[in-house]
Image 1 (cartoon, rainbow, N blue to C red):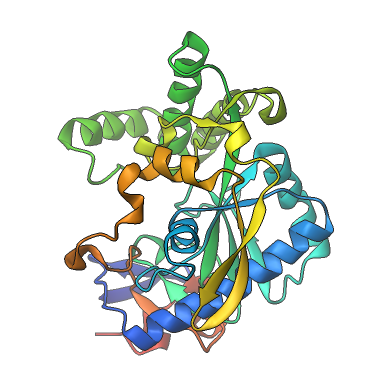
Image 2: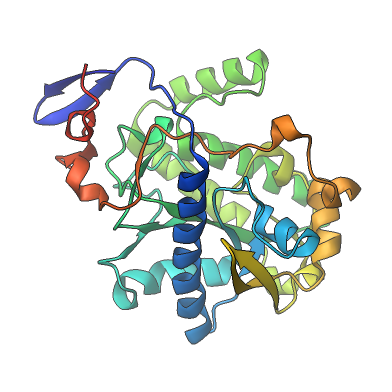
Amino acid sequence: METTEEDGKVKNLGAAKTRPVSADELHKMQQKSWEIYQYFADFCDQRGLRFYGCGGCVIGAARDGKFIPWDDDVDVYMPRHDYERLARLWNREADTERFSYVRTSAKTHTGDVMAKICDNFTTLVTPYQIDKKIPQGLTIDIFPLDGAPKPKSFAWWWQMLMGLIFNLYNVAEVPKNHGKVVALVAKVALALVPHPRWRYKLWRACEKQISKWDYDRQEWSATICDGPKLMFTPFKRKWFGKGIDMPLEVVGTPQQYRMPDDYDTYLRAEYGDGYLTPPPADEQQPKHEVYFMDLDTPYQKYMTNGRFDPRKAGMSD
């Protein structure tokens, strides 16, 4: 990929190409992801912050008792109150030399709607974040769980609408893989609010609307900071409860993973009754695209003026 410098910044030109991940690299991704999760889990438990595993690791623990062999990360849900407390506490009390809290704000644009915890001693660059001025290491994803009105009610549809607007202006990019009509509407909407500061004010206003239903007072909950399918999937708060620890083998080592109390009902709501059956062999692939990865080296080695520099990674033309 061709690069150039302008105003002291490295800019990437052209489409970023992804590369395959080897079996050894995938095992290392799983091990390093688990190290981030363990630190995060201990940090939360020591401060009374609730969290629950979600996605592939919950399936792995429920179905096989181990990390899904082709899974490449760890995902976590947090009730909104705990999610915001984590944001306030991390930079004051966590080991920020090793682990960074990463989330889009007025000054930082990550390209993601959720928060992340990044291992600063690793390097992993995705195609959509090459130009972002953010920590470029391996991460775990943290999704907020918001209280939600009764599904299909007027208030519920309002929350969903606010969620769609929040996601669009927070990411600030035309969605891919959702059809030409969605892409056209998103392109027009972004053109109507072109300035980053205006977009920030708009998505922050929407975020306040999304989170105004107290999680602990509602029967229902929603994960707004996610793809459209999950946004519109109602979850009952009681499914998550206090959380239970279950065995999960990670690269041959027994571990404990925090699961929703009623993880079976949660998984059936998100994935359907077939979650206990592994997907076809051709779908057993890591879900995240990788542009550059070096899990043994701090990402700062490959940065110039706060951004990833392909030349420092030996990727110049």
